[in-house]
Length: 362
Ligand SMILES: Nc1ncnc2c1ncn2[C@@H]1O[C@H](COP(=O)(O)OP(=O)(O)OP(=O)(O)O)[C@@H](O)[C@H]1O
Ligand SMILES: [Mg+2]
Image (cartoon, rainbow, N blue to C red):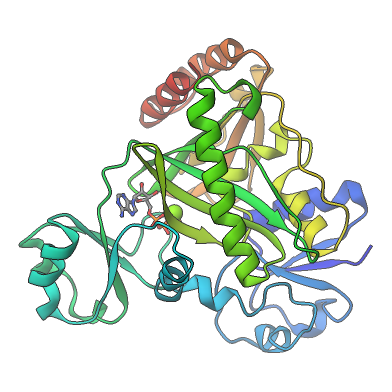
């Protein structure tokens, strides 16, 4: 098995490394400032856990590496402008948007997009950072240097958010997980809930959304000749999906697959980029993922038999993702009971997310 080098050494690289281990795939997550000589990249397949990177000695070396999976796709998706253009060119529904290039645009923007607009940095935003929610009058408070660097998007009154994680191999075969239902607060993912397709409570509606999402993400991955795992975040409006954004990598809303699917998203990505067999992962139980954000580790969580703790060993800082809890069980009441027991074991700001997940487990 070829080794894999991952550009970036955060939690996604760490979890790719963990997924490779049982298969005998050595995965090297590497920091951007690593000395190229110290990284065995020559004979490796290269992937990334981040979407863009500054020029460093290492990234300059890798920029020409022929085994860098999706190398030329990253710049197209890391910038919201070409990403939105891609969706438009494929005729895929997305939140209506415009490039924000001049302060004089505002009257026309409000008339075309409506009186609630979200301004997003084209490059570099994450976890809701680099975004402004703007109603008429608020635009004067925007910093002057964002013009040309942002898009303006219609604020969508969605009934829910879902994401689809899928993978494509060199052959063009695609596989997908069931949709994850996601709760975001202040732009940051707090929790995901997933049902196997077969026993989703609102089966028909769900099949319809799943099919729509798979068609959309297939079209995108085929157009890009993408190889590996890609995530697509969507808003649900009535019975339809609008694409929010794409991520050319393993994704936080797919972390549940570590304990809730026969093949995790991390293993699936390795299989795709190494051109190994890639069957559709089996999902037979409902799953819940709770993100740990700026919260110290609490060994009490481990007293609950259904809890799988994934701790990233990062310094705990406010609003920083430092770990997650995965729960998976055939009986959704068991999941609900565990979520109830977690409430007193987590800071109070988790309560609404835990309750949301319980409600999703109807
Ligand atoms: N057009 C919109 N209408 C309504 N809500 C939105 C819109 N765009 C973003 N949001 C809300 O903000 C959240 C974060 O937005 P988005 O996914 O664009 O940002 P991000 O910072 O890149 O997030 P991520 O960490 O997922 O990369 C969304 O999940 C959604 O809850
Ligand atoms: Mg997002």
